[in-house]
Length: 82
Length: 376
Image 1 (tube, each protein chain N blue to C red):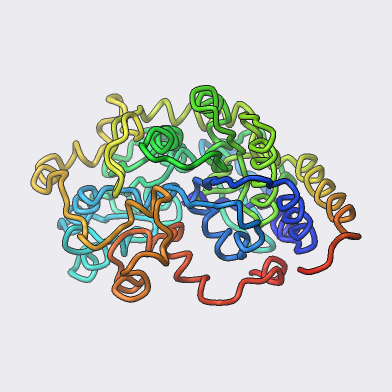
Image 2: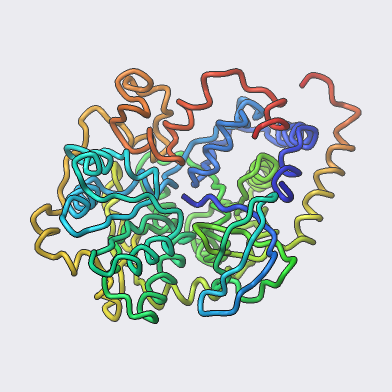
């Protein structure tokens, strides 16, 4: 039920529901930005039941991925059995 | 898909699981609250990566599963009325009521439609002004703002034939109930990242203060869950109890103010029975008086009263124990034989977030790290 997926805002239509075209890996859907009015074209938003519920913080995502990469490098030498 | 695939990398998953192994020195029992996380854990075999001293139990975070059977009966009755279009998310249709499910109501001639968004139901109401369109409003704090926005939009557009059968539930009161239950063995929680995306972290500060348990707000991809568990066991081993945010790319401390505002504008907290668990004070939402005209229970008062709030559970279904983390689905005697997704005894076997459905779907094949990489 709480499934929500990141997608990229391609186009925004003005109107009470701030309907945007959002691309999910190439598949596009209409999404309301009424709960995330600060989102602009090019932003990634996290979408749940037709509504964006947050603007994805790309810097925070990058920090997480860098931390994972660093941990993988650290873990490498002692890695033996899967 | 960007921001999904990167969080499924097998090398990083192995490194995180190694870090968890190195951290855990004593036995711990932790709970993932959200059914979406349960599915990811079982699907990617993440629990197989944990050391034997770390026990992960699945929580009640499946709104479809905890919707009381009496409310399902009301839904089935309303869906069967002439002139009604009854809209629901798909996985509600096979959830057993006392005698039958919404699929059976549809098969018997009821106009039951599966919708992806509350806005789809509103569009149906606009397209069919001669019909009454009722939408089953199921979901946690993540979903409630979407239904609230649909109600606000319906009022703005003057749509009079649209109403909600409200079954919304709230997460923090359920965590409180688990912690207060006699015999509770949960020592830390992974909190649901999308609920906190909407609500923020403050309600969890209160739980941590009151119960001295660590809570890590966690995302839904394999690396998110593994990192959430790592942060949790680090707190447990260090004797700390804090709210930590693993899912910073979506969750801000204060949550989403627009979503909270519209939720509070339209809904208010109410007592709510949880299927298999019982009533938890102030753990549900109902429409505020100012929006009573959109309440299907008000609009169809006579019909709803006919059905009542009772409802009969299947005597053999142990979903209450599963939802409280007291029983793993495969340990239920009915699992996979008398209870399957085609013929479910209870909701967790059919909901897309139900723990029983997760084990039925994924636990019959060998789990491997390979799947973390190549899972769809």
